[in-house]
Image (cartoon, rainbow, N blue to C red; front, side, top):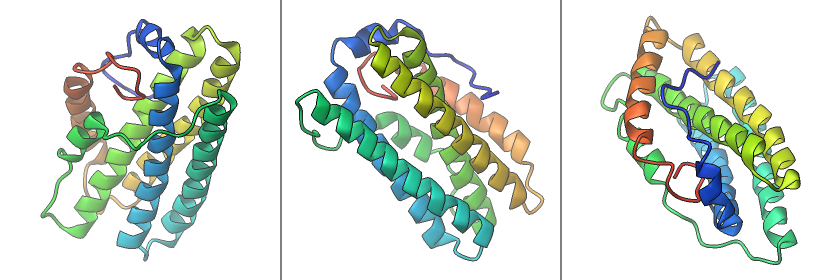
Length: 193
């Protein structure tokens, strides 16, 4: 369904399990950034009422996920660490087209968002199926389902507002680019690392 070209090696979970606290902090900030991204799209394209409504709901859900991850951190007797830079996301960001018509920029912004949700969904699936802590496995399974819904929503809006742009072709370009990027990751205890 996701179409990702390069799956995460399940052995990545072995790295994650060496420092669950680190991935939880990274994950919390990923959720916060997802909420901020949704709000940023709303600010840039307020005329698309259906999308605004959907992104408002998404932003609320992402903040709820942030709260859930923060609760897991507290349950483990820890505090939320400082925000981490996400090199994977920063590389994807550079692939977005800029200097084009506003509608083209929107499509790429939506596909960028879909890509991050797709990879997060895939990583949560790998975690849910391979992590030894059954509570964490269940936690990540539930989040995986949510991320899949986000992915499809972003793709759907990209197609809705395509304005003649071949979204399927552009999505294939995103998938190919992401495969090159993700090949350099999977070696650290972060969601995209």
